[in-house]
Length: 344
Ligand code: SF4
Image (cartoon, rainbow, N blue to C red):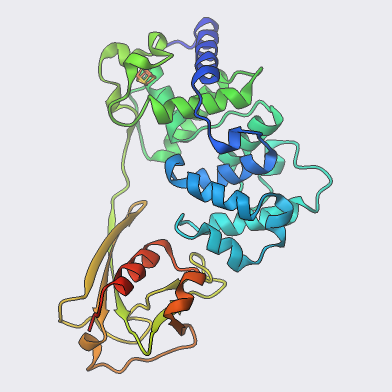
């Protein structure tokens, strides 16, 4: 499609009209504030809106402002992020709050927003357009998909980053300079609610008459993006109890990921090898392009091995487990195991 001015204007108008009428009543859109937008943008990175909603509500109750967040301890912050994953977002948000409260004025350009912790081009464009009305185009996976389909762009992109880079000039061209924040939110909202990866809801789409891929009949195949190969990793872990206490491993404060958080100890950290016995449980999960299999072994199956305890291994009373920060999947498994009668 040639994106001539007539097409661009129609697209902007139809999008805005639809967004004004149909936008979801998300909590950060009710009495909006810079703080709510910043928190919601950090939480929405790598996480679906539906998943983050209860976290957002809980977060706002505990940390209602940049000031309250800045004053909180790292432990408290991580505890309120527990279960959302990608904890560097929580640490960056905490660091950003500490910086913002020392400023007379919040950053006034997207470039300046990017000088704050955890703020990349996407988040800077979202915050500055939504809260300050700056003409910055937001380009995420939803926007890439929407543009590729509207323009019927059948190119194959090397990866997601390449697709974002290629689509950015088009997103800038499409940007509504009168209402950049609403326009960006409308693009993302349409990608999330109608122009979904599979089964796009073209019949109800507000820009259907402008969409080339829909007219050609198979929008679902777009965008074409080469997927990064998936890696498989296996981690063996131990379930060790002693007098109503559970052995956990605490990641050091300077760990790249999971800093300060607890997990079931890996056999590697205990200087042990995976036994031949059947594990107590096998759990699998996927993180971006990594498939992780975690095998949890009982004390009985490790009986023949000498375990080497280090300072990062801590015996935690069962009653204290709820008050420490466990990584999300480990929280679920620990709960599941503690609710079972006996494991050895
Ligand atoms: S018409 Fe269909 S493919 Fe085109 S933008 Fe709308 S939902 Fe997406």
